[in-house]
Image (cartoon, rainbow over all chains, first blue to last red; front, side, top):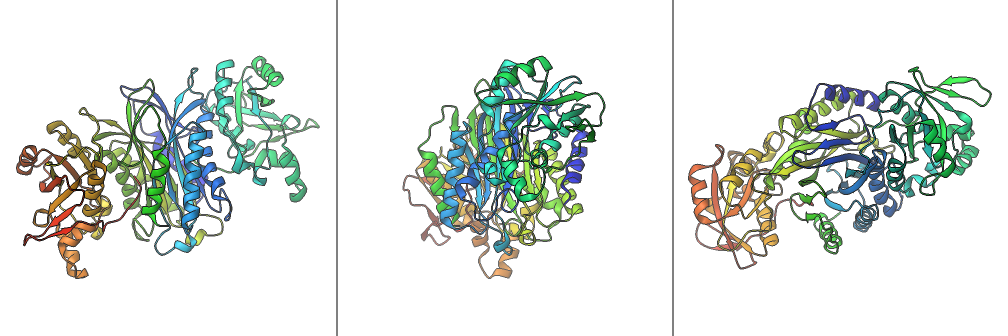
Length: 312
Length: 312
């Protein structure tokens, strides 16, 4: 299945619909609902699949935690506060002890991330294809808007600075299993500055920056020299023969935040960081819908989506 | 994986926790939350897996619809009104057209069942095991309590009549793919009578009746001759060599409602039905925690769970 095309197909289905209480539907990191006779709610669902999001043989503790953390990271992207989670898990060909360890990890991660598990569904493999059935967990996370409301992908305006938290690339060396979603940082940012747009870096900086640009009807111009490259990206580059910057741009699964705001407020954050995490100003939002990467020598190259794609 | 044991393990994890706004957690058809500064919300998640819940080759329209209908049926079990759904789908080795047909079916079923799809996640197979990777959809449904509040599994009291809607058994002949969840019936029942306990019949009458009994700290005594046996159960019995009653008791996937209420109100419903659907009084709730099936000749046999089990 070509996921990009399938997502476009589903977005077309969604484009024709209008639900009065739905503020944000398919197309952002999470949906935003004004519950009739209730408050505003943020909802997102996310999968981890053996062989795609983790290798066979990964400790079930890490798999369970990642399943929850990925979904909660989508709440961070909206500057939402976690409320709870539900999980549907197919344990494939896993044995009982592995299934119990993974179940406990999901339970504990949900607790740790302030999104207690309130329900679930479990199954083991599929009849005929059981041996080839991957372990798979789908976690749905519910959240509440922070005190400053939700932040969408679509609010970036030309002239905005583009910022990221942390350092990027090389998460496949281990960080993709152990990251903590940037909930505290997102809530602190939303309180301290006026965020115009935000996304979590799951598909990779190049792809996710383009998601924000596209949703905002604008482009971005990123400075190669300003992208914070992680030590993992450097280590991975030694093995891969690519540039560390390539890994920072395209690896994905960083689960850092990318956000857009006024250059003045961005400058302040770049000096002070947020919740002890560094913030880097990596470029700006431009009117031109073509996005660019400006290299160290001043040349610019079209920014293309080389990361992964999945429906949000 | 032994699902029953795994569910017990997860319930033990859950038993130690206390979340102030969580009215009902793991152990009923759906969770019930009092959202801080919001209203009361009902949440449930449910999977369909190729080879378990549908056979390879099933039209993707039926698979997509079933995925949504199963989750919405859990809202019916709580007498909740559907609000919205999110879906996480692994299309396994399916081709693009099949994935699009299934996506459209999920979208349309959610719309038809008044639970519009507001978000999702899609993936295709798993790296190494792709050929053996089953198609799998996890749907989370959110609902709001009906005007009479939610109905749990746990409120049945000795002396209550045990009732079911419709006719049971043999759904594998096709009905498990085409059923409409009993939302309208559940809401009408909750308005017209005082329901003490309710569940949807997904695991099978024997198993689900025991779920209600166990949650209520009671037993049930069912009359074999009163169980409404479907034509499908009769047809299937001709092939299987079993009794039609066996199929009505144990097949599962009926997605009818089982509920407990005062005998007087039950008698009224048995005469009038609900929303055009027949209601049968099939037994009573007893103080004895051992549950029984009373046969046509007056003998009684212990009622055992022969249906399927999955975590709710």
